[in-house]
Image (cartoon, rainbow, N blue to C red; front, top):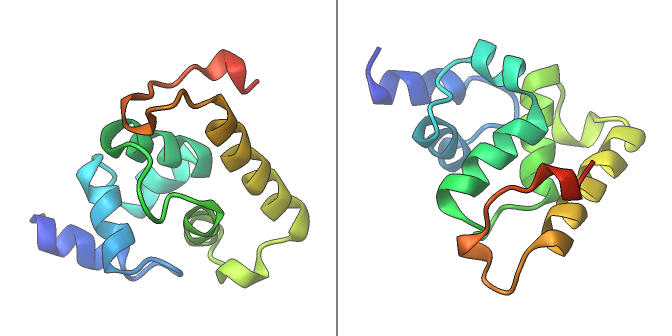
Length: 111
């Protein structure tokens, strides 16, 4: 399947627009199955490690991915899970050195 077809398929998932689908595709996530197998946090890490901290890398992005995985609108995700995702983003941000774009994952800081 070509890039445009894969992006179109990703956009059929709930909460996934063109920008989000392109980010997913850029890190090799081209199918719903890949998305589900990786999980929300790993998807975030893959994008973050490739592109660094950029606009849109926040809890809203995680809600969109989580909803795509669970087939829920972002605002239907249970509050407990939303709090987990917000805590994850805060833990990542807190662990960043001054230069976000050069950050490499150090999972031991987040576990």
